[in-house]
Image 1: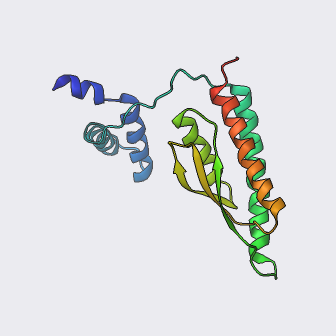
Image 2: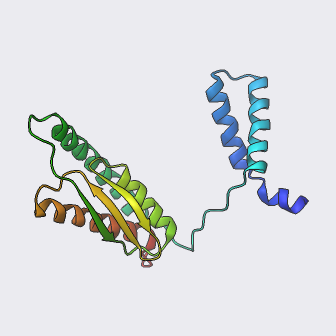
Image 3: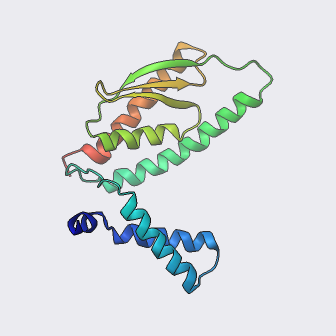
Length: 171
């Protein structure tokens, strides 16, 4: 019994939940800190989360920093494009559902790539096929074959970036 509790207890998670509770209450007091600690302990023990599998992968920090900068710029550009598509005085563009293969081998990296893609306006991962490593994506603007090819190229670029950041063995 005690080994189960010992394996479930994560002090960093309890501290984070306590901090978030105090922020939610809006006032630092002994009562709020105590309530946050109690709530954090109950949540961590009653709702245990598995450890995040890392598979020995190392993060290539310069590539990650470059990726974040590029991703933020793409976010601004995609937001402007979607705003223009919704506000222009023309009919809405054709959209498409595409199946796109992904070459990432780690499930955590696959998840991170999905999050990065879904946070960008203009396209969404609608289905994930883990067995075949494929995404089914919805593309907002697929008016021409060039638009479809550009979106497939964007997914391939994201895939290369994720592999370079998280799965690259040469450091």
